[in-house]
Length: 65
Image (cartoon, rainbow, N blue to C red; front, side):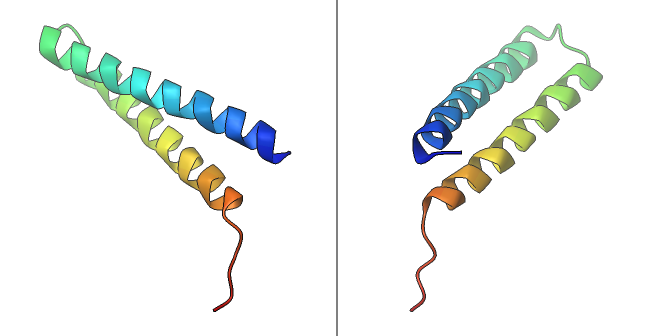
């Protein structure tokens, strides 16, 4: 995967993470979401965060001090 591909993927993941955050907030405020649905959305959001962190780390070269 090229750096350009990684940046594109990173931006898509960040967008999905923000969307997930908004969806979770809307469900909590509306009170229409059940606990299982909220748990699944939160779990997905955590997976997105982890994938974002991995991609960000791959873009930063290791520097030996």
